[in-house]
Image (cartoon, rainbow, N blue to C red):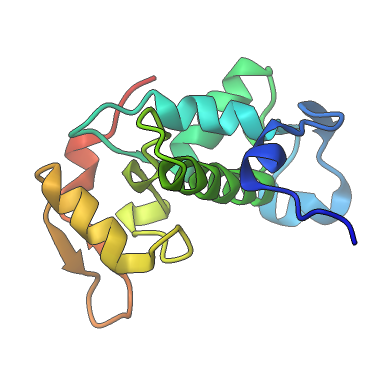
Length: 158
């Protein structure tokens, strides 16, 4: 039986990435025209690691940083989201191994300052970590989503 790939191994496996591709006709309906970068997982993790305590970043900011770095029109929204999730799970795995220098994944939010419930430990873990860093977590309207109040004021510029 094959050994299960760890999150840290997934994070380190860049395959043939990063790669810049032309936005085809099908994708242009959502993404416009130009090019998009499919980042390597470790690139997403490197950006997430740079977010200091008290500051935040969203997936869209990460995508903009990647697009600029690779001279692309946009960063791929699908792979950037998936790779942030891999980075978060790799950090959780490292923390469980007793490592202290982990990626602060709880500081990476979805669009609109929304907490990513798919990150390790779910909403409770994220709320606890963010509140410990001085952020206020509120429900977004009547939805099931939670967000960081006034998150725009603490978005980091990388």
